[in-house]
Length: 386
Image 1 (cartoon, rainbow, N blue to C red):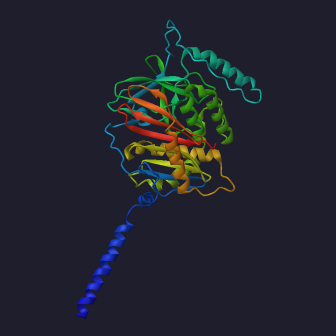
Image 2 (cartoon, rainbow, N blue to C red; image 1 turned 180 degrees about the horizontal axis):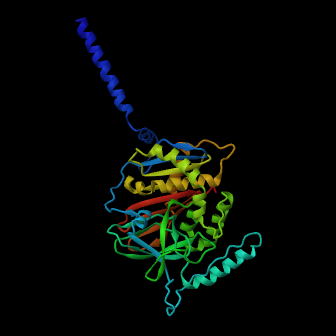
């Protein structure tokens, strides 16, 4: 009898150990997410930090299944499945010039050197041969192209940044609003190819622009042009990434090593988690920005781009001497403030494919992109503390 009792005790002990071991196999981020609800079906996962940047993963209790098989602009350009070209920059000398919005010229505190003044005069005069704040995107693939606000396109007569989330269906052409992020160039680079008598863009940066640029272009569109040039110049000066044309591309390339270090530390922690729908970034302990997609599949398309953008923000901010620790409570408060901001929505852009609304409160400014069917696709927001 004693032997039977001992055997039963051993059996139940081994079974309990197995159950504990199976529970421990649950992904750490998911355990964190289950402990930190933020309302509206959003869960907050365990954060990952590198230097002055902390990133919290976000989950949705009921993520949507995206029926469309989207392709990113970066992937489409690399595969030559999409063409991005200048508007009104045709080489036909008999064609009348395209309508041209008035260019804003940045006036720094100090007098500009003569060379820079000359560059600006040439740039303004040449703008009659094309449109600064618009490009044409033609989707030649059989998949819709999803373009995030803050995506930088390289080439054309100047590098530009997309101002609003945009969807380009298969076989369609759209004119898309952009801002210039290369102040001193208005001519094709050597070796640039053309299509339909227009200079085309060859690449898209694998990073969103920093939040200070992205936020301004989303809120003001082309009206933010002067502010964008100022922000590009500030970043280039701070990170020692100046060029003769003042291109933002150099800021990203100059910081490539540091960006890769941030990305290696953060991306690895999230690599195996296929349920993440978004992120909240904190810099020096303060909540800075948020990107939330309707499904993990959509986030997967832009995960590296978003994370690299947060790292750019962190590099621009620098490390504070006495930074406090980022907390789940602060993230919860930020997400609640976004919900509050949604009560004051303002339509910024709408076409037959998508609608973009601006969300604003005293503490938050955000942007909500919805597809033509009214389904939420991507929401991003920024703290107004800066």
